[in-house]
Image (tube, rainbow, N blue to C red):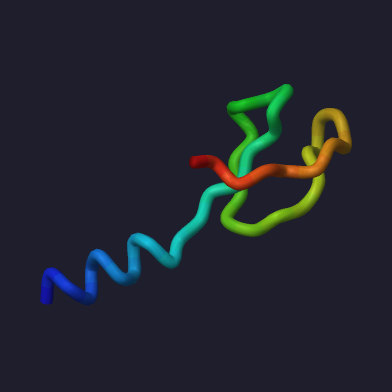
Length: 42
C-alpha cells in the first residue's frame, strides 16, 4: 500500500509561474496573470 502511494505522489507534478509563485497548476500551460510559461516546481 505504501508503495502505490509513493508512486502516485511522484507522478503528480506541480507547475508554477516564476513571476507569480502563488499560481499553481497540475499541468503545463501559461500563467493567467502574465502569460509566461509555467515551469515544473522542484
